[in-house]
Image (cartoon, rainbow, N blue to C red; front, side, top):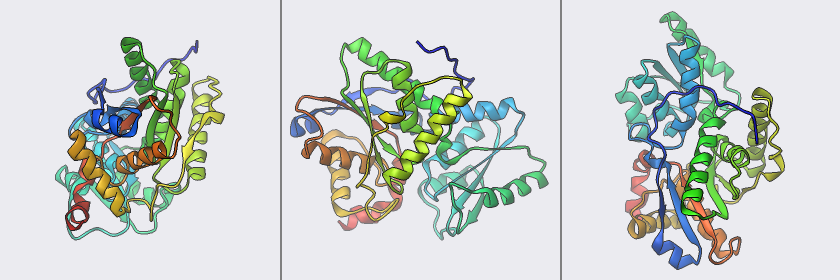
Length: 329
């Protein structure tokens, strides 16, 4: 047993999220595929980011902040969730996006503008070292008399891991109730906090599942470094030894031409899942992870009859900016 207490959080997400069985894909592939619907954590707050934000925003309020700064791509699910969570709590959302401002506001970016988030564009920003971009946003906030907290990329750090530690607890409760075991739990990996939280939670709650991630950002090695750093910081911050560093299992090869880039087979699979199971995956995160899962099943990573849980991390609003690729196909 681990003697550890979770920090305070605000309750924003609709939890616990349900777990559904994918009957037709399971029959087709010979593996029992279940999906945990973290796309159903809310509407404005949908997706995995809100679990981590519950802790970061509680910490910001505790410290007397009245604005939050965060960053991500123009269609960042994290940025959109931060904007609406902040607005719900009476905080001013400030965003830093890479690249140039687009001519047309659509998808997540449109929703951010609808909520009147203050937005800065930094064409050459490095989201793993965004200090110079943050400085401009902080100066604007000071001029407006706002006290700011900075939330990291994807809300992924030692504090943010608690979001998916909680998710691991939900999965454990489900397996206890159903008297079953998931041989493997699958998720997409970007900034690392979702995967790291699941891994930490599997240890804390005795979840007898292998946690496998498919990176959609950079390389598996880079993402492993991010996860390792977050787990190390977590152990230091909360005075616990989990011993999970050697359990990190992230499989490369499904980024495609780059973050947010698609290919015809990926688009076809997203359409197939919509038709066969009535579930919408997005081309940036969940679609690539599900494509990887199907490919790895065909390559023999799983045994026939295995119970596999796929974590649906959301991203529905990210489908719309790619609509032409679906139509043209």
